[in-house]
Image (tube, rainbow, N blue to C red; front, side, top):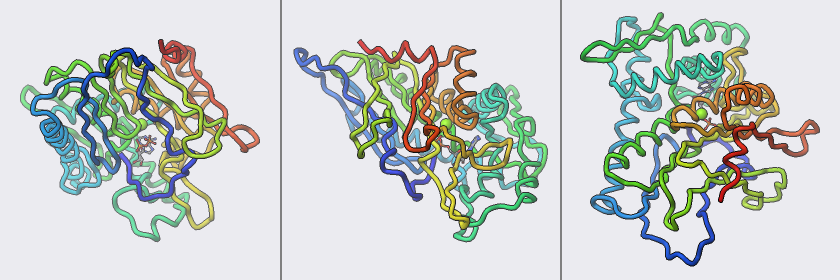
Amino acid sequence: MRILKFFMNPALLAIMTVLASGCDFATAPKEEIHSDGKTMGTFYTITVVGDYPGGQKGLNRDAEEVLHRINKEISTFDKDSILSKFNNTSSTAPFRITQDMADVITTSIRVGAELNGAMDITVGPLVNLWGFGPKKDKNEENKIPTIDEIQKAKANIGLDKLHVEITKNAAYLRKDNPDIYVDLATVGEGYGADKLAELLDRKGVQNYMVAIAGAIRTKGVNNRGRDWVVAIEDPRNDQAVGQNMMVPVCTGGQAISTSGSYRNYLAKNDGKVYTHIIDPATGKPVNHRTVSVTVIGPTALWTDAMDTGLLVMGGEKALQFANERNIPIYVIMRNENNDGFEVHYSRAMQNYMQCE
Ligand code: ADP
Ligand code: MG
């Protein structure tokens, strides 16, 4: 989830593009139904091969309903969402949430812990402090927080300060102190893509691709009966928008998502540019050479949580982490001279880079 009001680097805009795959012109393509729109401050697209109950109208309506419900649950940009109400209450008593919210928060805490807290959904106070949260004015956006402010915000951050409690009839969220602020922005797109995929599964759709910004779910085959292909941009030959080489990736029905430090950033009054991805350990926006990490995995929620943490870790550590656990990742870094880019990928990624 992000707001698209900040500057973007046009040369790096299209880190992940969906390619129509296969050049099998002998086979006539099957009918497709498309649906797209705006959600979570970004865009979503759904491609269904074959029919959907109620056709395109039915698909639009159902997708909007799913996304609307998610926003009402977890958006911190909607002050009436369940999560905003939890963030705004000073009570530390168990707070009733939905079972879906309990699932997404439990998974986020688990993956965050595996990443040693590099992805931390309690990072909200720092996100807000650096001017990337929902409450901000121009002064806030421009100013650099003091060390003291950063220290104070860090005191309220930590995955161990947030607890999901499930009883027989209901799910609850509890915080250790009133200033804990939960930010599900970084996993929201992945979670949303999973929920759209779940909708299509429920409706019996066998072949589809769902994307919310950089979080993608695929199932089955495309309209030419071939594997879905997702393209990751290789920026090494960066000449102009759309001129970059594309690396085709066949996800084989898995989820894929990308986290990029270049997509949303602010220029502050020291003349420097700061990304919206924050390292909870330092309390500051990351400023290493790694500009994006793409991850393949079983659900888009999982990959979306992973990609953010791996980006925070930086390319070298991320590749070591991924190789130790057999996770397919693709990393784009600025080169040492800072005049171009280099691309690295984990061993497990190689299997996905040889599309038939
Ligand atoms: P990207 O797609 O580039 O990963 P997202 O929009 O998915 O970006 O996530 C970025 C948002 O996540 C930030 O705007 C902030 O709200 C939140 N965030 C920033 N740093 C972290 C972090 N280390 N862990 C969890 N959430 C973070
Ligand atoms: Mg992410």
